[in-house]
Image (cartoon, rainbow, N blue to C red; front, side, top):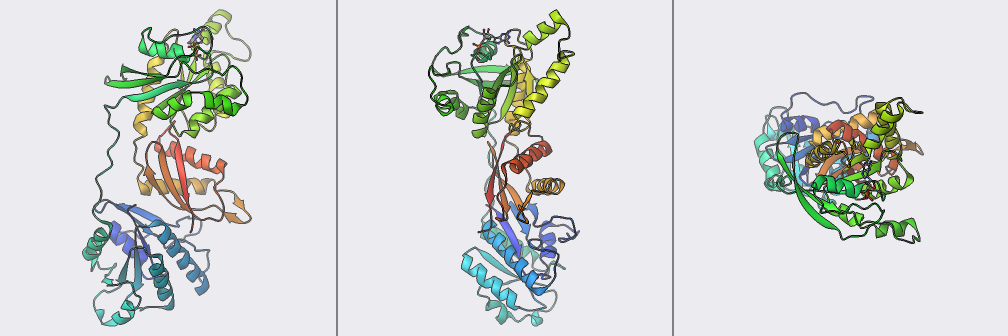
Length: 457
Ligand code: GDP
């Protein structure tokens, strides 16, 4: 965690200091009506950390001293919960106030690393009663002028000193590492046939009888992508998965599905559906299992040759006007029923004719590549801000779920930490809304996002 939070009572110059460190000239207004700006964040590239201005937290449109004190306290609690380092800003012209002392005490108790910053030390230090500053008990103060830049380089150096130097950029996944895929789906949708088609060999047995049991195996193959490059794949075969002969419960059924183990090994899951049978309840359950593993899913609608043939032989048939119409209606039904798969690509294929099988693999390559994306913190926060303004979370008992700040903490799956108020839990529906919105914003179709919530302590 390389997050640095600026705290301090109102008007000590927190945003000025933020802008100075961010090398931004425009000042950011926190409490414009209708603008949710609880926390302003920016990535400081040369220090490898994220800087937060907490000055917007807690304002409820009231400027009474009590309201300002409450807001400051909320900001401090947020900073303690979030940051690796806290910059506590006091006002060198105004001197130390009772609120400053209160904040200092809370910060000391938290045990968090704190640097005390005396701002507005513009020209003459005489105005500052340093003894008073030292009495805060937070060590040596750094004297700066956010306005004029005095003490800036010392402050930058102090931040780096406290955080340590930036770690090496996390290595993206090795592109030479074969991309693991597996087919999951109900019996008889064509998983084995698709496996066979991919490998173009007889190494896998396709059975006319649903549920032939074989051991799970991993098979390597190469695929020449749309870009002309060769992509190594590993097919984790789940052809042996079968329904147990006697099923006590759905739970038992799924615990028996070896495919679930296979899913853990894969990078991208192909969820196979039957083009003629549509999306069944069982498909939905199987999709749910894949979603639980937080794996990216490509939806594969197999046996498209049968749909083509039906239109060829019969022409239009109720309620479908054409192949394209069938496809559109299928896709719509698919997203209605599998609404919890985040914008997954849908590929209509035929294992028998080989139709669009390449496209299916290209989709896997693309989704796999997206899984390594780094979502810039500032852009991520803008996106969250946009989404929560467009459709605010439902208020329960007059209290609204609020996201103060978001940051990506991992890949595969995307892990995003949401710092939020604890007033209300994030509902599953709203979580999905945020996930879908971010998937859309960052072009991550098919990639699940895992939110980890950090409320106020
Ligand atoms: P699995 O149980 O999901 O592995 O399904 P299989 O691969 O064993 O296929 C089940 C049945 O569907 C077999 O009779 C296959 O020949 C048939 N099948 C699989 N894919 C296709 C396809 O794309 N088109 C057609 N027409 N039949 C298919």
